[in-house]
Image 1 (cartoon, rainbow, N blue to C red):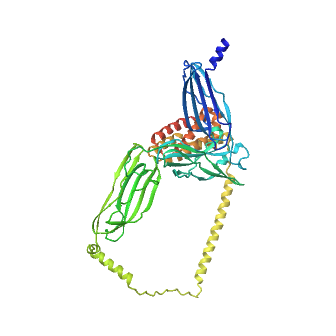
Image 2: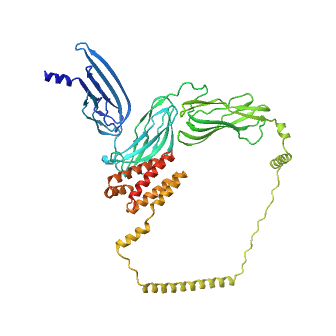
Image 3: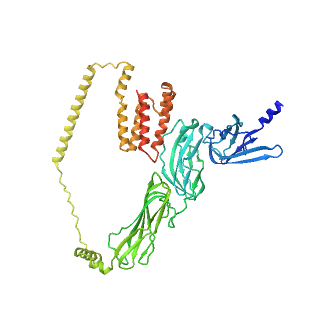
Length: 571
């Protein structure tokens, strides 16, 4: 009875973790199924399902369902919870999936770990003779939950165990797709981080903004690049990233189209002359602000029987900002008034959605009030000087004026030979020769004096090295004060240049050339904690340096960490 009771008790909780298959292609999705079955009403699930380490995957979707039934034969309550997780592998090869844990009635249950194999579809060429030379791209998007037409920032990184391969990555092609708009922020390569994840060196290649223009689940296609070697050129691609794009809220104005951000609209007359009937003039509609500025639909000039309008010429002056593309777009219209008198040029109604305040803003119409003149009124309003200038211009344009003939004068050459010039040149050459002889004599005397002076003792190698160190030593506190001054004046570019000089100065005190050698030196002589802190600080500096948004608080925190660490390791 005791044996049977233990078997029944053991069977009351069933926990399993299975994959839909054991081998996957490079672009396949790994589907995991977790089943928890509780047989009995006295079983209490005390914790949720604790997933294993899935850092080698991108989680692209998950869901769960709970079913509760009563077995009529045994009158037992059966609760079954089924969870599904869709994963995208980050790398190829054999990947271990750990155990799932759950606590029921103060007892921990777990599944058995297992391996899945992800195969490479693209044929590998002579670029990588072994796994130590693999190169792959990784596209990272931190904010994957955005509104429609709201930007999110993507960072492109390259990883490899061979640092030399990072320098061979070129020809970066950003993703293109109908349901997204992509605008680059920069293609500035960061410094190589030798201590990346999985003992692989990494480097930031590019940063760009992604504007999804439809709601739902939007998949950002991979970024491609080429890796050039002496023998051939190989193409590499990054991972795909899925975005959850929220639909814009209800209650949008009728004039709203697709503008998301914060904008202003103005209209003005760019022509210097007075408005005249049946003569063209330039009217500019200016939209400025920050958001999806290059991709949104601009407000047009409303049609009217009082004037005629033609298609505009668009001029864009935009650059990456903190919450989108920032700048202004000018639409230059050709407008021809049809009647004299007061003229009112209006734009279409314009509205935009502000994602920060989550509300719609209706700017309405913008109006340009003008007074058009007839041709007779323009002539009467001209001053005497303007009339004289017009008459002169008409005269020069219509009357043929004679061309005056000019004569070029030439200086006749003299055939007589000047003996005085020849004698003067001979005297100058003789003087230069005498000066040369005097200089050689002075040089010989100086060499004899040097030989008679006893040479100074150079001392030992240790003394010489000590003197060189004293001459090269720089007060590190001067760097700290200068960095504080640059931070207060928001001179960010000079701040990071000075920071690189400080790091090079400290490394030169220990005669270490690169940052990787210096980190190894710190680990041997200062301890692993100091070396790890140095590596984390270098990575944080690179992130702040290439971040499109720089705040005073983050720089103050970074400067404190710099002062604490470099004060410890500096001699």
